[in-house]
Length: 110
Image (cartoon, rainbow, N blue to C red):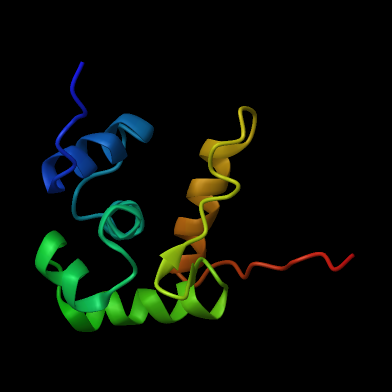
């Protein structure tokens, strides 16, 4: 079995699969597309603008929230909580809320 082609259409289908109610012009949908796309091509504003067709200044604004909250760090995406069997889907959408500026990530120190 071959891997799916991870292009923009695939990303949008995945976001729709995760939340079928969202419309493509909803901010949460766009940020989810940016976030998922950054896993594929990296946390690079120019490449994300080319891939998603969203304006660079819009992606830069979202990127500020992602970097400040370490969703994006050193050009990579912190997906460490997304694949938890029980909370992974929630963790992804919480990162989307971070990109919207609604939430801040906090980290427990040991």
